[in-house]
Length: 106
Length: 184
Image (cartoon, rainbow over the protein chains, first blue to last red):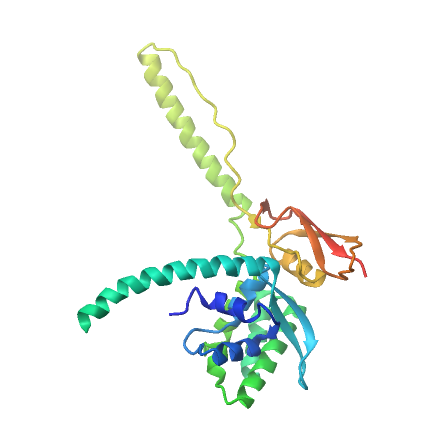
């Protein structure tokens, strides 16, 4: 279901503050989004990195091993802004289609 | 779970992913799996895939670390052009014969060389990458990276700050891409 917008969600959770891979999964979960059944985030992170939408650096984590941190790059922030606009448009259209179905079922 | 990561490593090796980057991905995965386990999160939620080889291949290919399949060999392509040439010659002879029979004048057009569309690589956005990452990525997609050090204020040591040509440009494989890297 999330296919296509999970990358937007990943960019969103590292918009203000960098995070390593698992930390991103945790941030999604804290905001109520489970990635169960959506495949792994790593190939998506790989693509975001390849396209320069995230910048990465290595740093020590709190009491743990050094981690690879991701954060949205300037072009990632622009892509996210465009993606959010597109998502809101689609969401509105899908909602209006589904609303009629709901009315018929109820 | 180390067995899973170990199988990933083997797959990356088989696919020709540089050791440096394979190590980076393996370390990242191992730390994240350990932390997930401590949180009581199943490895399956992290991996989303029970087959380590498929997982490793998808990740590396999305990251642009797996070379695209090679274009058909030159020898084979030459045969294709020979065949096309023979077919055109045959058509030409038939048309010429037809016009000669009807005593009409003949104008012919000579077509230019076929467009080169094979073996092109889209230039990634290297800006912001570490030089080592950019070099590995460039080499992997068949580009020849050339590094020039530049001084930036504030300093951006070891980071690509500009590139020529720009990202998304398509160039034949083997082309040189110029990376300007911040001096230490």
